[in-house]
Image 1 (cartoon, one colour):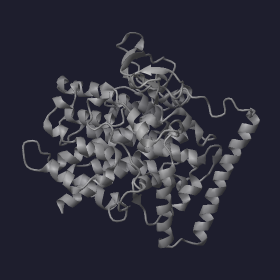
Image 2 (tube, one colour; image 1 turned 90 degrees about the horizontal axis):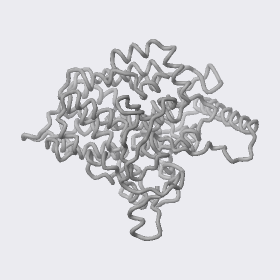
Image 3 (cartoon, helix red, strand yellow; image 1 turned 90 degrees about the vertical axis):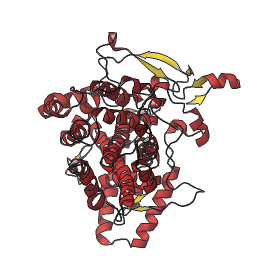
Image 4 (tube, rainbow, N blue to C red; image 1 turned 135 degrees about the horizontal axis):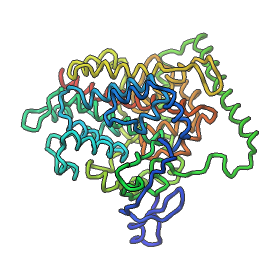
Length: 495
């Protein structure tokens, strides 16, 4: 979104939508309807999701057992394309929101609101505003952070860092929160809060990456809800940017398009086969592996988040990101966002070597000790999404997709400065095409910028369920990366 108008005063009051070119007033409130036929996702045809839900009784059972809202919401409907994973997700989310734990129930939902607000995810904010009130939350708190207890306000800094630059979290941030005094956090409370923050930052990535539509409000006439919109046009709502299909307006006929897509898929299959053969023949040295990681980390700098923003310098874009009033009340420092870990011209930040502080050997035991059983639930969820496979790739069956899943997971961690010594990062460049990298970086680092065009532009032969699997991998990789930085800081505080 860039400013429109012919004078400074006009520029201050109006924005120009880069998608539909409409001129928009700032701070405008519009009525947005949610048609009954639109389905849970703006990216996925409704019939595909509905078919999955109607044939799977397991989904209905899971919703009855573990859904905090008591209904089949849009997130759950899209996740139900992968029922095995959905069970792990719902169980862990239910545990952190409803089961015994260090934090009172209203605190849990307010922390979810604070986390979702970092990415302006009105879908999650609306959901947890309702849950906050249902669990006895004080309505006045919903007026903004100035109305909440100081100890909740004190989470602002760690919320901000976890959401955008988790590598900056230090033991001093932890010490500041747990210091003695009336507003201090106990370590179990803080771990519970960190788990919630990381969960909802990552879930915002899934919401935007999957084009989750707003829930239809049955209590409002015709399903209309007033939504406060500043720099978003109606075409942006729920991520449906109404951008033409990638091939619209081209001279290709349908046969040549299909031929191109088939060739694209076959080329990816061939690269996977070749990489496996090279891996079997000769293993790269540690020195070479380090070099390849550094190369991939630096190259991620040039993966620009979203084709609609290519023409704008970074600082100009930030000036245009004016947060809606409904969201800004829940955050401080709204201009603070993701910056590349390997940013040019800055002092080099030390890489987080995954072997020095792993989830399996360090993070899991710490989180489980301070917040009983959540470690087991999170570990099951991480393992489930990482190992989930149907041994298919688009139209091909009996395919080992391990290499592809690992590349997706590790590329997310690479952008957060986390390196695995035993992984050859040369595989990332071989397996992840540029349009997919743009999508991954956007969904992971700036999810609110995701568009339907980005979703449509990669893996065009693949099923929607396979793209949802990609989003599940990105979500869990992001959550684990944030957790690793936070738990490492807590460990350093304890030692």
